[in-house]
Structures are given as C-alpha cells and as structure tokens.
Image (cartoon, rainbow, N blue to C red; front, side):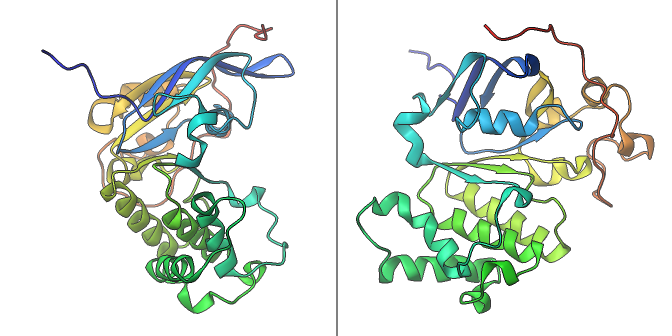
Amino acid sequence: MTQGPPEPAIEVNDLTVAYREQPVLWDVDLRIRAGALTAIVGPNGAGKTTLVRAILGLVAPAAGQVRILGQPLARVRGEVAYVPQRGTVDWDFPTSVLDVVLMGTYGRLGWFRRPGRREREDARSALEKVDMEAFADRQIRQLSGGQQQRVFLARALVQDARIHLMDEPFQGVDARTERAIVDVLSELRSRGDTVVAVHHALQTVPEYFDDVVLLNVRRVASGPVPEVFTEENLRVTYGGRVPFLARGEGPGAPASESASGPALDPRPDPPTGARE
C-alpha cells in the first residue's frame, strides 16, 4: 500500500486577511514541512508578519482556515511557541532574565504549579547555550537588543513546543547573536521541531534554511530552497527589483552584508472588499 505525503506541521487553506477592507493576505494556500527550518520572505508590506499572526490566531481571517499538526490551533496550542519582533515587546516590564526564560516552562507546568529546581536548571542550561548565563539575574530592560533576543531564544529552548514561529529573529542583531540564533535553529531542528521565521536577508536563506515561502500578499512559491529560491521567483516576488541580484549575489551565492526587501511596494493588486 502506497503511503501518502507526510502530514504537514502547518497547513493553511484559502487564507485571506484584510485590514479596513484592504487585503493584506489573499487566498493563501501553504503547507509547512514538519521538522524543517522554513523562511518566510517577501518585500515590505507583503503580509509576512500577518501570516505568522494569523497562524497563531492573533488576527482573525476574513476567510480560510489554519490547521497545526492536523488540528485546529485551540487543540494544540501548547505545541506552538512564538518569538515576536523585539519592537513589539514592553522591555520596561520589571523582570529578570532568568524569569523570562522560566516563562517558557509554564506551558508544561500548568496554571497551579510554580517552576522548581528542574525548570531552573533547564532555564540556566538554555541561557548557557546562548552565552547569557552570566546575565541570569539582570533586569531584561538593562540588556542590549541582541542580548534580549538571545534571552527570547533561550525561552524557546525550554518550551516543550514542537513548532516555533519567529518574527524577524535576525533583525538588528550583532554577529555574535546571529551565530547564537543559527545554533538555536540547528538544535531545534535536531530535536525534530519545526521552525518558521520571517526573514529579510535574502543572501543567507540558502545557508540558514531548508525551505522558503515567497510571499507578496499571495503565495508566490514555497518548498525546498534549491527548488524554490530561484532568480525568476524572486523577481516575481519583489516586482523585478531584488537588491542582492542587482549586485550579482544570486541565489546560492555566499552570504555577505545584509540585504532587505525594497522600500517600494510592488505588490500585485488583489481584489478589494475581501471580507465575507
């Protein structure tokens, strides 16, 4: 008996999200492969963050549905971890680095148990992996941006989640933090976890990720990086203007300086009045 394709970690069907009647995502169909590192790539305003937030149930779709591990999100919420953009976090909240990482254990402890010795050991071990153990008692607001990002990654490591959604984890970080992020991604993949990350630096996609989703309101293409991350697909996604292609750094070229999508908005024009 022939087996069908393996069940995807995340399946998105006919997803449309609109703000003030203007579609931000239009009729998106997507399957995220389990156990892979997947980048979501596209120009500014393409709907990348909105896609992540829709998967998490943080924005209501106008149409379509999302299934995670074959189930509605409500049934598997404990299997999903989220690393938001640093700019969306209130860093003035008075809490220590260790306490932030311990928050990642709450899902397995439930409402009525407090973190104990095992959880604290796990948290300190995770901090050591991202080279932040010496800052365990420091207030989170006293850290640099890169250090704060490493703390969030340590929190992801202690969660028992199988799926990790990250919104621009590499944005604005130093080289040391970027290396720490890559190491964390590799560890999560070695555990069999699925990672989906919004990503801007096109030239590092082949180095850091297994799969890629090219998004510009609609899904342009998705799948393994060698098959999907092509010059033709990138030009369709970015409206013909891809900075690192113009510099001769085509797909598969060695990583160099960071390159983000163009500031202009070359999105295709989806139908208006998308709410149903």
